[in-house]
Amino acid sequence: MPTSGTIAATIAPATSGYATKFEALAFGWHLILIAIPIAIVLSILVMILVRLTAACFIYLLIFLLIGTLLTLGIYVWTQPVGATTGVTSMFNSNFTRAVFSIVCFILAGAVLLFVCCYRSRISLAAKITQVSSIFVAKQCLITLVPLVMFLITLAWLVLWLLEAFGFYSLGTPVSCTQCYPYQHFNLPTSVYILLGVHVFYLLWIIFYMIGASEFLICGTACEWYFQSETPFRSTIKRYFGKHVGSVCAGSFLLALIGFIKLLYTLLAPDPDQNHTGAVYYIRKCCDCLCWFCIGKLFDLLNSGAYTWINMAGDSYCTSVWDAAALRLKNPAASGVLYVLQIVNMLLCRSLQF
Amino acid sequence: MIQNIGAYSTTIQDSSLLLVVVGLLSFAVSCFFMGVLSDSMEGIFMTYLMDVDAGADDGKCPPELRDFIDEAQREQHYK
Image (cartoon, rainbow over all chains, first blue to last red; front, top):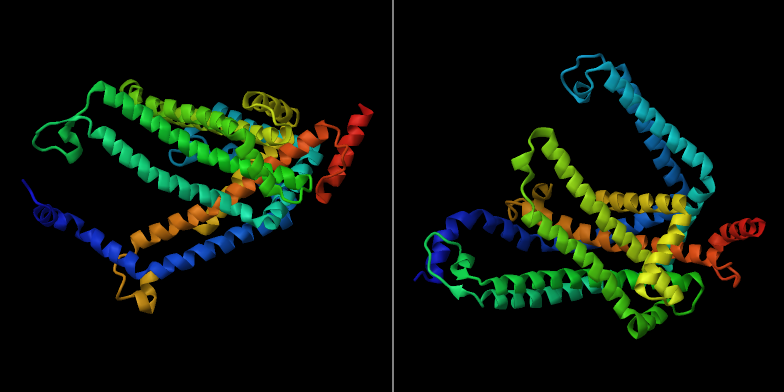
């Protein structure tokens, strides 16, 4: 039977590289401490930037998009036929090049038309962005909500892991050579099912924490909008008094989608067996895009529903339906706002790095 | 870059893990802030839509959105 000492001596050569990395972590702990305030300052700067230049920022993005589409169209149009390298190697026939360029020009025209038709809606999206950053500045304690939820989730995750090890130990120990430690257990089907339920439970709790945080932020924003004196306190009271079940329902749906995605990834046949080359990558992209869209769509429906619940006090299903219908009545402002959220997120993250 | 700083040139031999930890922490902080901004945008937008849909008759709204509420009310009046 190997002892801890012999195992440590066996793995020492393999882990010697990690030792210097962990030593660096121990010596550079104050760099980590400095990084947090710098990250906070940069995030606040991005928010101030968004507040001061929301409208200019949106128009800049739109014109950048139009410029990119036009440049791409002209570039492909003017490339000589028969290029064997770069992007143009895909457009070796005049017909494909012409179609691609025309599609680019049409898209650029459509974006320009959209700007002309929905100028007031774009201004509304800019104003909403500005008002949101004023809200965050005035209710700055609200930024602690996701942090608190994150810490609670971390603590809970430790418990979840302990439970998972407990379930795993329900298997029968077996002896086998050349096996990893976790391969020394034979698990009956019932334990596999139990572990599956346990994974679903993990997803549900994580989405519940995210949902609760969204509910509290949306509710506080809603109360602040109507100039309530204690927006956060009223939202907390409402949440714990009436709407914990609604957040449970919302997070259950997201967890279900996450679980189906997980099962699909584990059980679906490998596309490599049926497809090769470009088809393989196209299928992979379609899979990713499909799951991303479904996840984002439900995420969007949920956050709208939480605001509706806060204002109207309806049940979860009614709120999802009504909030989606209201959003569909205002597609332009909704779309611009959604794109802006993604761009803000990317901008802030790229600045941090 | 870290290893070029005098104090760390001898003590830190491999800064890759340190950089990963710093990157992850910065990423988490930006996620917290942008998540809050994103959710509040969503909340305020939805509240505005509901307010306009309900007729916006109580007059309570952020002053920055007053013009848009008035315009929406005028549009509803013409309809």
